[in-house]
Length: 53
Image (tube, rainbow, N blue to C red):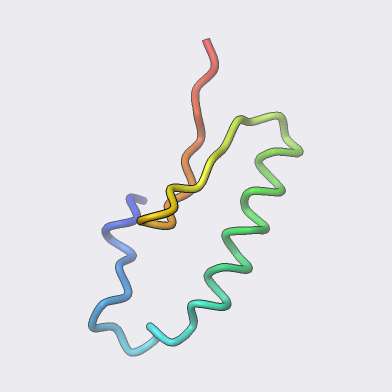
């Protein structure tokens, strides 16, 4: 799901940024350990999986 659809602006649960950060960190660890090349966009916070040729 694109990060724009998860934009917390105007949502009641927007104060849970710490939880989102922990989940993002866990997602990075899982994908990296599975051999995927991943990066986090610093502005949007999106986790991107880079396709390897």
